Structures are given as C-alpha cells and as structure tokens.
Image (cartoon, rainbow, N blue to C red):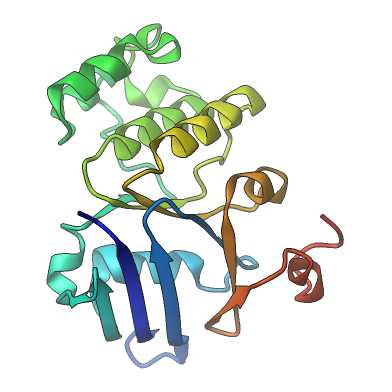
Length: 220
C-alpha cells in the first residue's frame, strides 16, 4: 500500500555546467495533489526528468520510508513529460492498444467521447489539445501510485481542463499527484498543497498568498 514519497538533498547539474538543482527536499503522501510552481527555466522539468529519465542526481529518494535506488525510480512513477511521447505516425487506437495499462482501462479510453471520434486518426493529425488529453488519459490510468505531470493543461481547452481536474480528483485516493503548470487559475483550485522552485531549491508554500510574495503571481 502506497503511503508516502520523500526526496532528500537532491542536486543535479548538466556535465560541467553550473548546478541546476540544489539540495532539494520534498515530501508528499497518499491522496495529495501537490503543485510545483516556478518561472520558465527554473528547473521544474529538469527535476522531473532527473527523477524519471536521466536518473543522474545526488541525493536520496524514499517510498514508504524505504530507500529506492535511482534506476528503480522509473518503475515507481507514471510520468507525463512536457513534450509529445506518442508515435506520430501511428493511429490513436494503436497507441492506446500498445500502451502498458490494463485492457479494461484501454477500452474505457477508446470509448471516451472525445477519443472515440479520433481513434482512427494518426497522432500527427491531432490538435495540440487532443494529443495532450490523450496522453493525460493514458498516463493517468497507469497503475503506478506516484503520478508526475509536466504541464498537463498545455493547449487544452477549458472544458477538458475541467475534465482533467475531475479525473485527478476522482483518482487521488491511493495515489500522489505532483503537477507543474503555468495555468495558476486551474492549479490553485486543484492542488491541495504547493512548492515553488526558486534559485534551484524547493520552498514549501504554507499559505497560498506566499505565491504572490515570491513574485510568481500578482494576485490570486
């Protein structure tokens, strides 16, 4: 049973370049939806990639208070990256059938009203919002308890922003969501707690008004 996810003293840099992330501390538990805020270039995607793709950081990660080696992390995390990851020249139906989720989840996605109407189209022919919504549905239906979403609302129309929020809220029990997105109007109502990434370090937000204090927004 999943209970908690903890990062201690995580640091990261690209080869000989200056350090991007410094002494990151993070704690999240089951049923939380945690927003990671930060300006462009602050290192949010770098943090997510370090945890899931590059696995090249210093520091420690714990799940349920048990240490997890870096190479094992990707097995524990469902990750929606910022850039399109589906094969562009394949159809929507093919992409769903090949994605590593349970068969009944694949069938549910294929029956979803927006997806069923585009199921025979190539991924390359879809709008940005259609691609993002499809990717969200696939990653959100993974059986992994830690779900990291990098800009899930990018190019998504307001009605589907709402659907994404509803799906996340409905699915939060037994899971931890970690989300970054610049649509603060959506994030402030969806997330149960926030961190902000400034100067390579994460700072926990204890009061939403601190988001304004740190200069990320003019008002809420």
